[in-house]
Length: 110
Image (tube, rainbow, N blue to C red; front, top):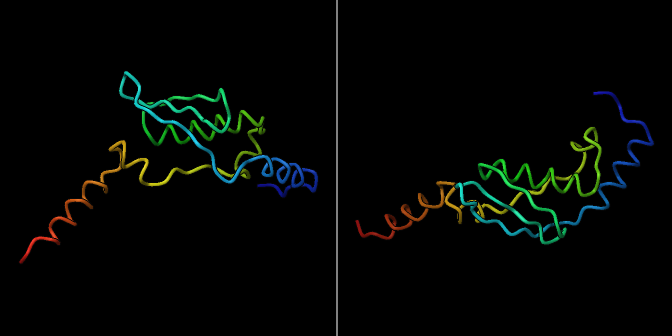
């Protein structure tokens, strides 16, 4: 990767300053079994994907588009990652059920 110029570095810093520390999104299952997300932080920013992992990528892409971040600067701008509990709530991260099962086993007398 080529070294960034001072102008590019300043533009990246400017773009980073636009992004809030966190965003709020409403996520639901779509009729076809995929996912739909509407960002409440940025009205009108809606995206969808087949899997939860793809949805997270699509949310980040939608926010990048909202701020008109050039593709070449995207790797230098923050990405949003949901709390683990969100994936667990949708049953897309199997650890949740495993943790519950293990906790129940540990509570059982020997």
